[in-house]
Image (cartoon, rainbow, N blue to C red):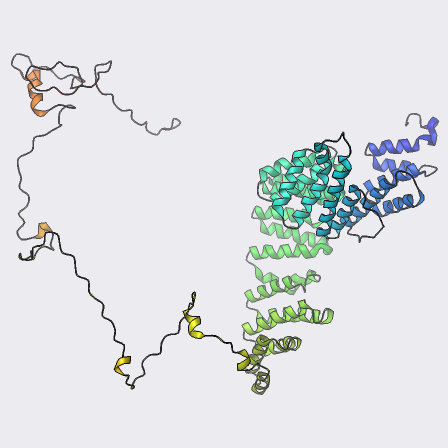
Length: 605
């Protein structure tokens, strides 16, 4: 078509734009469509697809709305499905509010797109129910086709199951989500975009654990054609997770490379800088991380809140909480300044520095903000309660009176607050304390029908009242006098050979060597040495069997190995010869046990 563009003219505009669209030359396809002399229905259909790929959702919705309104053919259901997809994308990526366009939910594609739109609005339970409905419709519609197998049905349901797992993950049901994700991966669907999203979500569940599985899954996100199947924010999230995975696997250079690339693509996005700072912290370079964050905060004031919070955390890690108490450090937190968690953190930091006045001032500013914006709200009263408790804890009862009065006026039946208020007034104005004490409930209304003795004797009682001691000067009747029981002494055990008629040895407690009658052991004759000769030989028999000691034989020098192990015939002396062992081939009866080699260099043991 490019070669014969002059002869073809405008007759093949749609075909050319469609080819460019399928070749992923979306920008060229858009120019070809816009250059057409006439916008036919075919071109409008293709125009809507191109705008969707370019993420120009508002224009795309207008195109499909116009097509549905002005055309009546067999493709109406497909157009409504595409329009529902556009609405879902706007809800998810642009956080646009859902509009009721009156689209039916007669097919599983329409139900699925409606569920995606509900996810973007945070309505997870409703979205999960829609996905269940889409699953049922899909099974029913495919069951009628005899050519469709069960594997084909499961493959078609894979995208629905993956979205179900995503909802479970958002709801904190990570084990169920992981199981469903792995089922989708095992099916090996042909949609590379679905595989990439599923693998990425598994990586987010693994986090810094099971990194080997994450390294396998990350390969699925690098498949060819993934960039044409996913939205820009999806691809961005995958790249962020790749950088984090490189950090968790101690690939510092790869992490820096990926985060730098992300920063160049999104200079105002804080996440690449946060990843770089996290990598520096892993390398114990906290000062450089703070400098990097400070530089980004100065260049991008709109993102200063999250950056400053990270800097505050790093200062705490360095043991420098004094930085946090300065007013300058909290100027960027105007949007977070009055949140309960932020107030709690500030109060804790001021308390750490023993600056009670600074902590009370934080409470005061937050209470004034809620007093003007949301008076009487739950958040307002909760702050007042915490401020009052904080002041009472640090002995500022006079300052806590106004907070306690405000709380008591909101709920006059709150006895606990009233008691705190009376206690605070007792140090300032006793008359006011007495007048307020009249509002306390009487003792009769507060008493309960409780049997104290039964309660103390019940199972699990941890405290029992001690009986009152005897009052000095009072005499008690004899029948009420309690005598202390004397403990019986146990009789000692006597030795087995004890004789009561014999006086025991007075020196029996001394060691034998220290007794007066000890004379030491008698030195007797040495016992005949047994077993000093060869194995199995007897002392008496060895002399008789020794041929060297006979008069007829000349003396010979001993030979090694010619002991009792040699096989000798029984002698005629009548002495039983020693038991012989089976001789070895060398004539010796015993082999020397192998010894352990000493630990050497390369050989080991």
